[in-house]
Image 1: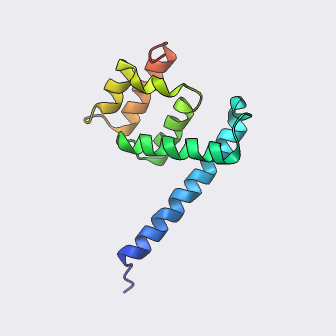
Image 2: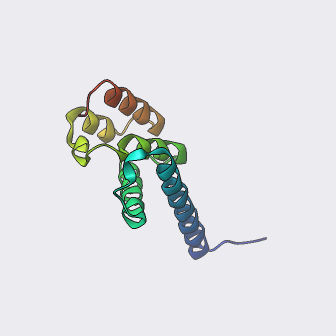
Length: 113
């Protein structure tokens, strides 16, 4: 029987997180036109900040975190202070997919800006 120690799981988790960050940086570079003013380090920092923000709102499934980053990457950070956006993000009884769907609807309809 193979036993994986807690420390080994942390290393695996850190590697998966770094791989996801790398994928998101490449994705944003390829799909976002307004990043020319950002250095690679600034871009990575913004991606990491958005991952942390997503996790703090119980958005933790990889595809939903990707959508969260896509939604908020080009928006000003004060959009997080919008009452509709805050209400969605702070609701604990919504799945992460439902939060993303509500955020999409709210931001697409002009809310949150």
